[in-house]
Structure formats: structure tokens, C-alpha cells
Length: 416
Image (cartoon, rainbow, N blue to C red):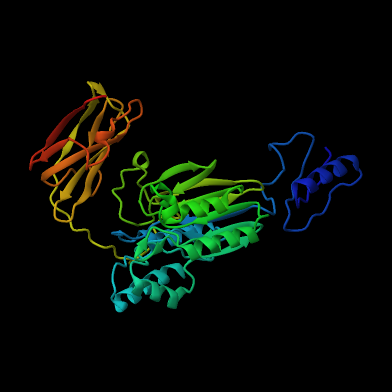
């Protein structure tokens, strides 16, 4: 049998080595550097190919999502240990890193000290992006500046641009201010030849009605004509958008408050894992509880969560029909109304199955709803067009009482 050792640096080099080795039968073996693949090869071989997935332009990074908004014990700190097992080249974020919502400097410092104690355990760089919990007021903006400097910035790596934006500019939350819009335009112009652009911010502000007012319209105008992806958090529910032919990702949580109803609801703890290939990225969602070390032990942690004040809840289930026909894939939500403040608050929600049945959740998976009177909205629906009057609490004619017993709601919507 003819035999030789292959030294592989690139796919192109491999082809040359194979051809050369097979033509020079007098060479019994070829030596290769220790950092390259060495394998004995014959006329028939038990492998598909020797083209390694190691393009020098390829790299991997992770994105963690919201940690706060009622964060839970030991999730984010354990996520750091789990990400270290995956060994990305660096880690990005999309904001809401501390609970915030305070002007007390001592509390702000304590919360950032705690968070930084976790991020310093990463075995690779961690890039901060601010959320509304992190920049709630001018005091918190000042403390961010003293600690981290810039609220928005960029960097490039292997001819890929990373654009880290700030969507929180108190008192104008959920906006990209004029100064930042101009900075985005200049930065993109200065990096117009990169092969891909990744954008990170906290809120999915492209879902607002007036994109000129909140500044996202100007950002998208500057992004026009290039290949890019956008990552955000804030909603604590995974959702994918397509805009201008590009993919936008609203991530779920990495320890932040969540009802944790699973993939169907987009409610889970995860990291986004991005592999930047030669021409485009591959994006995977990696569930935290699926990342385990060799001994299968959960990483140790003393991270304490924030208790959520809960009212007693009572089971609520039911069926949605439209003119007698079941409505699958619709979101059913219950809202309260504060007449003094003229504010509607979404309290509970659920999704209908293939025959229009649903169960409602307030705090945790299918726990029910606190007793009271509610306005019902119904949105979405896979096979039906929900009449507009049911889609907003200010318009909906549906009102239901929830009592301190199991509750069954049979709601038949009136079609056009």
C-alpha cells in the first residue's frame, strides 16, 4: 500500500500535497509541522475529505442577552463559565446588565461591581452595550461614563465591522440621538469595504411607528447597500425580523426576568453563537442548560436574583374562535387600565394551539392570572385575519372577570 503523511495549512495547500504525494510514490512519507494535520492515507480512506473547516478568515463569537429586569439566581454567572467552555474569540452584549432604575450612587456602584466581578471571569474580551436598566437617568449616564467611557463605539476584526450603539438617552429612551446618527454615518463611510457589519443595541426600535423620530430611520439609511445583521434584547423573548433583506435578531435572556415557556414562546436562557464564514455568518442559538463540562456538573455560583413581587394567581384557559372557527397561533393577552394615569398594562398572555385553545401565564409557565377585571386583546393568528378592534386594549370590546377559581374563557370574535 502506498502511504504518506499530509501536512495541511489550507484547502489549497491540501490539493497540492495530495497530488504531489500520489505522483511521487518513491517518497514513503512526507513530514509536516506539528501544528498541521498528519494522517496516513491510502487509495481508499474512511473519511469524507481532508478539507479542514479552518479558513483563516473564519472566527466565532458569542452574544449574551438581558441579565436583569428581575434577574434570577445564578444564571448569568453560570453563563460565564459555560461560555468559557465554548471558547469564542470574544463576547458581545445587548444591554440590561444591572437592575439599575435608581439615582443612588452607592447602589449603582454596588451593582456594577457585582457585574464586573462576573465579566472579569471571561477568558476572552467582553464588550459592553448599555440598556435602559443601565442608563435610566442622568446619574446612571454619568456613572457609566466614569466607569466605561463611551456609550457607543465600533471596532473591526478580520475585515468585519462591529457597531455598538446606545438606544438609551434619558429622558429620550429608545432613541438614537442626532449626534450618534452622524457618528454612525461617518463610521460606516470610513468602513465601507468591510465584508460584513454587525450592529448591537438594546431595544428593537425598528418596531416603533416613527423611525425618523427615534433615529433608527437614519441608521438604516446609513446601512443601506451593505451586508449586515442586527442584535438586540429588551423584550426577553426571541424573535427574528427581516428588514431590507437583512436579518435582525431580538434575543431572549441570559438570566433576565422570563416566564420560561420554552422555544414556542421564545422564552429561554441562551447565548447566540456566531461563526463568521468567508462570505456570511452562521447564527446558532445555544441553550445554557445544554452547555455542560466533562463531569456534567453545574458551575458553582453565589449570584443572587431579585425577588419578584407576586400576587396570587388562578388558572385561566379557554378557546378563541372567529365567527365560530378556531383561531390557531394567536396571542391572547389580558390588560388592566389605570384611569388616573390613562395607562394600559399587559398582565398575562398565552398562545392558541391548532384548535384555538390557550392557557395564560403571569409570572411562570401557565400559572394563571391574579383575580380582577381585564381587557382582552387578540393578535396574530396563522390562518385568520383578526379584526383590528381586537388588537389593541384601547379599542377591544372584550372584557372578562377573573375569579379566585379555575377560569374558562370562551371568546368568539366577530368577523368583518
